[in-house]
Length: 273
Image (cartoon, helix red, strand yellow):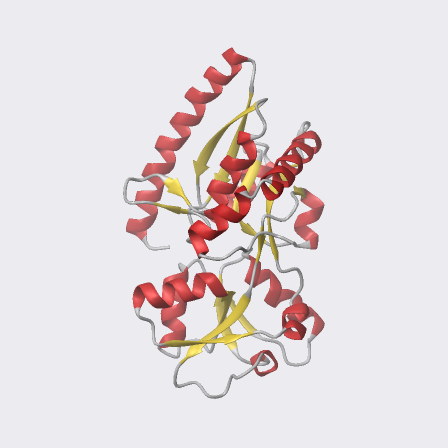
């Protein structure tokens, strides 16, 4: 993440934190419990900051819709660096992390997972002049740049565990997704595994000279869970909060609200089956 962008996010995060403190006091006066949701403001369109400095995105709107069904809670959002979301959950400073999280066995030991809130559709991005990669099996031995902890990074790490003889060359980076895709475009890295909807959006918005290779079902199954989740701190009230959040997810699936949010951001329904 570049310096100017982080300064901007830091300023917004400070404002959000002040709002959290004020809202917590107001909630206590009303007898409601305040839940603080942490997010890094990336990747878009799951979580981002608009031109007015306000948080928006699929995960953000889903959280709002869930808690709209839970009148016993009030919510506040805090913007922070990606690693700090998990650190804050560890310290119970935050109760919920909303950041397009995939299932991860090590992480599952530390946090509660909600029911899934999004069904990912993975695709491979390569430069248009790259003819070496035509399917998932061609990724063996090829290089890619990923942000630690995001769903496709987790998927590739799992794939490497299952195929140790010729693994994908993973380089971990804090670069934003646009920069990562531009590095593929210029040939610095061979490919990027990414959510198809996110990839299509970035290619169209920034006129990237990339092509999309869709995964068949067999290849998609090789890289683990296709779903994204919310993470909940394993604090004293974490188990009850997880139960309540899951009830909220069930409600917004059954009443069609989750499908509406998906359609708003992706023009298609990626709500879990």
